[in-house]
Image (cartoon, rainbow over all chains, first blue to last red; front, side):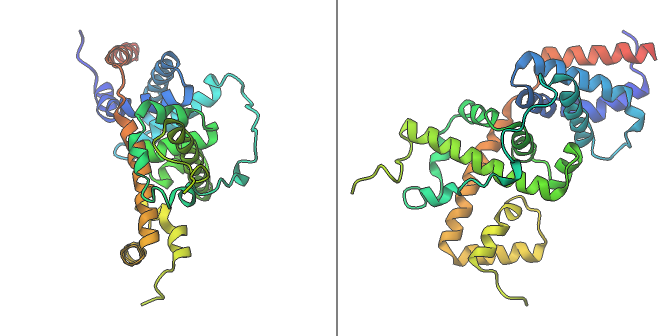
Length: 190
Length: 81
């Protein structure tokens, strides 16, 4: 095998460490392992081909995630114009904390829910909420990094994250009630 | 020293506080409020337990076969110039 060129070496060093994060985000966006693999592969090829546009030492993860997300929107979304079922900014789910503060104020029931169930609930969120929540709370990106990757104003990132968390908490709470991890407030007769 | 923050303000700021995206001064105020206010402290714990659950979902890794395929494809790209 030939010696890798300097360009490949610098791309390898900067981009390959982010493959795990790219794959996880691709899985959440596509909801399918084989599509996620294709999306990551396409992303890495596109990134390599535009590697000259990347400034070394800046945020490679954010740059790669931007390419991944744009590739997903352009090539992978089954319906290009997914109908938005609700006014995203108007969703104001009630704070779950208010519902559990008497029975489980610190939310210990969360720790009983297995990862697969958490991910199922994440996947059920509308895309616009899911992508912000995954980038922030699974991958640990800052507001500014998310705003850059998704092309959204910072304020929109913050409000979507707020609403995404509320929606997810409500879904996980419903699951926890179903599994008997927590007693619903209404169901108690004392 | 400014007015200490109240529960309403603490609830509004909780997301930024837990994301560690606020000024050190405001973070210090939040810590002080959470230390003296049990309901707000509980709510912060609740959100932290929720966030820990999501952080735990970052265990999935890129399959080795995919990694190897990408490395090989990049090498081919490089050779083609």
